[in-house]
Amino acid sequence: MGTDISRGPLSDRIRERAAEIARKKSCDVALEVGVGEGLLAKSVIEGGTVRTLVGVDVLKQKLIEAGLRIRGDNPSGDGPIFSGRLKAVAARGETLPFRDKTFNLAITVNTLHNQPSWDEASDLLGAVCGAVRPGGSVIFDIRNGRDPLIRAAYRFSTIIDPSTRRLPVNAYSMSRVKRRLLELGFEVVKKVPIRYRFWPIPSAFLIEAVRIKK
Image (cartoon, rainbow, N blue to C red):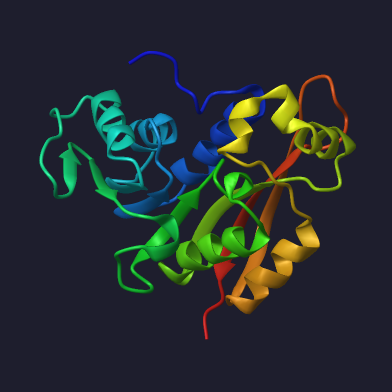
């Protein structure tokens, strides 16, 4: 399947820790927004109790790659793609084609930092959280806006990597994210710092938040 563009030192660490948390959840059906090439989906499906993972991505080619990675049938057609325990759906993350409060677990990693601005990231987070039932969890990450390494790298990203002119990179503060989660009726129950091996300051945080039962 060639080189996976989703791979990278920080992205891989985030994905590994997210998979560790997700595999401990007892869940028949879970949601992943931004399934990409299926790197996280494969790990969650093969190593945990999630029986079916609904994977959403805006690019159908990525859904095909995810299906092949999980060793399902070669997907075809315009409808949902079924590949064994992966049900992949082509859709935008901020306009998910599901009823509110459908899933006990929703995951979106390595996605928010590629949104053009906080407004778009906030909308995406709101849509993902909206799909989660009371008492259910959402697992996601942010790049740490207080890390000087990340701030410098992202400030000059278009020089270092011209592709970021098409795919932006942004970092945010935990305080801003917590405020948004509170608006959505969620509270943070886990915050995992993710670091580069050579750097003492967290460059990202993996977050698990739970919808407050009312």
